Each structure stands twice: as C-alpha cells, then as structure tokens.
Amino acid sequence: MKILVVGGGGREHAMVWKIAQSPRKPQIFCAPGNAGIEGLATCVPITADDIEGLKAFALKEQIDLTVVGPEAPLALGIADEFRKARLKIFGPTKAAARLESSKSFSKDIMAANRIPTAAARSFEHMDQALAYLDEQPVPIVVKADGLAQGKGVVVATTREEAKQAVRDAMEKSLFGQAGHRVLIEEFLDGEELTLMAFTDGKTVVPMVPAQDHKRVGDGDSGPNTGGMGAYAPAPIATAALREQVTRQVLQPTVDALARLGCPFQGVLYAGLMVVKGTPYVLEFNARMGDPETEVVLPLLKTDLVEVMEAVVEHRLDELTVEWHPETAVCVVMTSPGYPGSYPTGLPIQGLPAPSGESRVAVFHAGTKRESGRVVTAGGRVLAVTAWGPSLLDARAQVYQAVPSILFEGRHYRTDIAHRALPHKI
Ligand code: AMP
Ligand code: GLY
Image (spheres, helix red, strand yellow):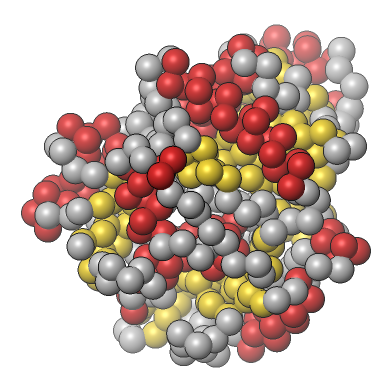
C-alpha cells in the first residue's frame, strides 16, 4: 500500500510516524516533508499547495491514499481534484473546508443550526467596523475572515487596540485578502479546549480532547502563535462535556454540511471556549490541529490507516476507534522572534536519535537538511512530545528532553499543561 502525506510540519511528521506503525506496512511518501520526516518516508519536493503537481505524482506513483495535513491545499480544492481523478484522499472538499477558510461561512452554519458560539458581526467596510467598535465593550476580539496561519486574531483589551487590528487587516492588508473582511466577536472568558473528530460525512468519532497553548509566553502572555504546546487528554473535558460537544456541535455541523450538499469528510476540529461548564465554538478547522496532532496521535490505539480508510470509504460506523489510557505532552521549540520575523538556517544540535522504544518523540516542524546538517527552516522548529501513565510523568519526560536540544535563540514555554496540574492526572 502506498500513502502520500501532504505537508511538512510537526503535524505531518506525527501523521507519518503513526502511519509508519501500521501493521499494513505502507510505503510512505511526504510532500514536501522535512528533515525529521526523511527517516520514515520518501520526501518529494512538491509544495503542499501545488495541487497539479501532487495529483500528477499520485497518479504516476499509483498512490492508494493521500492524507492532507494543512488547510491551504484543502481550501484550494485538492480533495475535489483528486476525487475527479479517482484518487482516494483523506480530507474535505473545498466547499466543506469553508468551515475553516471563511469564518463568516462557519458563523452562518452555527447560527442556522443553533450551535453555541461567541456572538459576532462580519464587516466588509472598515468605517462600519470602526464605528461598531465605538459601541462595544472591551475586551473584544477582531478576526480576519480568511486563512491567516493562526495569526489573524487579536484579543484587544482597549478599543484603540481593536481599531488598530481592524486597520491592520483591512487597510494595511497584514493578512492579504484574508483580512479584507473582518469578524468582530464578543470576548469569552473561560478555558480553551480542542475536540477533533474523524468523520465520513455521517458518523462522527471524537478523538481524545486536547488543550493548545496559543500565546507565545509563559502564563499565556504575549501574542498569539500557531501553537506553543499541547497536552491530551485535557481533564476539563469530562465524558459528559465531550458527549455534549459531540451532540451539540460536531454532529449538527456534519449533518448541516451534508444537507447543504457538501458533506464533510476528514477531521473536523472544534476550537472551544468552556465558560462555566458550557462549551462555545471559537473556530472550526477542516483538518487536524498543530500541535494537537502531536499529542493525540501517540494515544491512538487503533491503526490510523484503518481509520482513514473507513472515513474515505464512508464506513466509519463499522469501526471501533480505541485510545491508550495515557497522557501526552508536547512542547514546541521556536525560532527567535517568532511569531514575528525570525532567522532561518540555524544549525540544530543535540537531536536524539529516533527510537521505537522511547516514549519521547521529536517531531520536526520547521527543519531542513543543509550540507548534511539539520537546520531551522520555520517559526515553529520542533514539537517535542512525551507520553506516559500520568500527566506528571509525561511532563517530566518532555522537559527533560527539551533543554538538550540546542539552536541559537531557541524559545519554548516552560509551563505547558499548567491548567491540568491541579487535576493531578
Ligand atoms: P481562533 O483562531 O479563532 O481560535 O482564535 C485564536 C485564539 O484567540 C483562540 O485560541 C483564543 O485564545 C482567542 N480567541 C478567539 N476568539 C475568542 C473569543 N471570542 N473570546 C476570547 N478569546 C478568543
Ligand atoms: N493549534 C491550532 C490549530 O491547529 O489551528
């Protein structure tokens, strides 16, 4: 069996790593991959948004299953193109991926289906957005409507900051086309939670709940990033809360898209804010989260290839998806300056040799090989994950592994999973 994974970050490394453990022993390709993925898959120099190039490769190599990691190719319609060419692909169509690629589309779906979410208004004209802000209380949240790599959201504590965020998006085009429409959203004060689910368009199978850490600094300080670390399962997501989110959020969303004629197939990601025990949707993503994938997949007991095939073949209802009763913690190591501008090409030292026995995995997020050395090639460089019987055990292991990995100006948070510590899991 031949599998192609599209993407080259920490999420895709974790996917390739998990697929490599399949008893089906698939031959794995990854486009474009990175210096860590190289050891497990054949990396092919095709970028994740080169849909024609990827399709030509999949046809030539007779790929049995293509798995899409990032949102960009989904928003460009990779799943539509592959299906037209009779290639099996794990990931939603362009129409279904609008849940992520257009925040106003996802708000409309939620409003029409009474899915609990933060109240919001969408604006195409800057003057109207600025005038609206004059009447709103702070804090308030300003979001670029389109895809902005997790950086298009500003939680403003003053009106001036909110207005600046509107101007940055609409006037200065800080997020390009993605920010020409903005959403101004009510601020919700609570605890964040990620619940992802496999879905074949009908059946919804939730994964273990995870918690991401979006802010760059310890104590949740500084600007938002793509994600600085994660852990799973998150104790805030009791069995009852998971059931509630599945019933009130995930299933109705999947059903709504099916009714609209654009069934969602792949992974539906709900980013939630839990306010006094009640979950509200902050965002949907049309793919697995990064770094949530790096903590969720190590806990998956069922063969990932089986699950993905069941999704693609619309028979997820026939499968029981099982999880290891363990906890995983991931710490992301970033380049100096991230999420602002940062240098690349910095040599990385102290990377441990990958080992099947170890309960620590160093997933590469932004790396490449240059004259035989592994160097930094992105803002998020490595996603170091450990798992074990308890949160304390996994956390101790991950923070033992991280300090010995060195590159100039490296940054990481030292408090990943702090919210779970009082739960003593
Ligand atoms: P999003 O990309 O929409 O998930 O937003 C990025 C981050 O901004 C979230 O993970 C939250 O930390 C924060 N955020 C987004 N929307 C809200 C909101 N309505 N209230 C409070 N914080 C929010
Ligand atoms: N960790 C947040 C995301 O993947 O969008």
